[in-house]
Length: 443
Image (cartoon, rainbow, N blue to C red; front, side, top):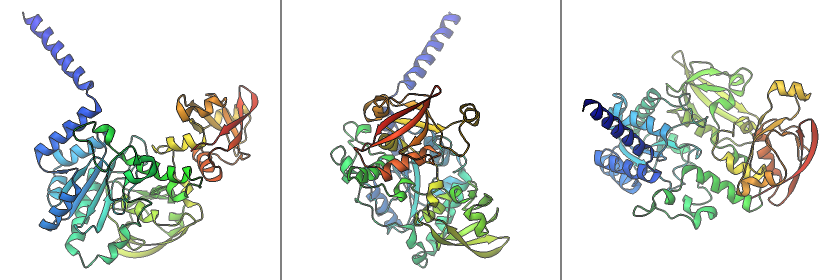
């Protein structure tokens, strides 16, 4: 009997685990809402109520935009809310709102890197933004960009700004951007007939949700479908500080961990340990705030004023950014890169050819050599396949250019120099042979 009971217990546990593994995205979303509403700490997907509560109580407002379910984001969020003894008391001083979709989101106020699935806004009830939190520079790894100690310091910084408000309102004006092309996501042409301004709570919740990355996709589609070049600012949104040579400490509040030699930051005089108090006259609470200030800079470059605290002394620095500075950014990790691949490379996934392969194929170090790692198989992402491209091909010339060393460079060339319906000539190496192919540009 004992063995039978043990066997039954094992079978029940196995069945339970299997059932959990089989949960659909729809189930996870609904269970998340039930849990959050039962706990009663967060206002769930109701920004009007959140703003009204903040106005009534006089508390600052914390809005977390979070995709459901996103395992990495859930991990950070759950730790932040349920386990961290430093974070929780800080959160209790805010009106906390969790937004799990962008349907109906006010895009004149909530502007952030839409390739993220976790973004935090700290605001006044009147819509003045104290700061942002949430940074990402890799598809799955986030520890180099965000941390619980960094979050705690950003929250405390927002509380300090709130205590000074409205005397500091003018200094915070730059934290809100200009209005976008449309007031809310569902009004963009590529989303208009698919989504509404709210989730289908009684129907297919997941299918009715506009994800963060779809906002960026819709903005790029708007230009592409009109036959216009996609602006560089939209192609390279919210530049990461490391793109200008600033390696920030995710454990601290806008603090420099290291400076890349020969970078714009190095030339400006930034040093490890500098606490950047203001950038472009904006008070900073996090790496995300640094990104926001950088995002205000024209793609053609310009000077950005900075005030840093170094060894107890305040110093003024000038960050000079050259023309094309945004192109230093990496697009490959972004969800949006899939849309760009559809438009410009017909569904090809490309990577730089390894050095040993360059030597074997006798390709000079300074010459273009992009390896085709994957060829799309379906729909518009199968355009390259239909054009004759194969996995393992090495692209050595694209549209007459041999100076496009990264996949990002090729994609940006395609969506800024070529229109949908045009075809570009592509030269590839395949098993020692030089092959000429024609690749259609798509919308």
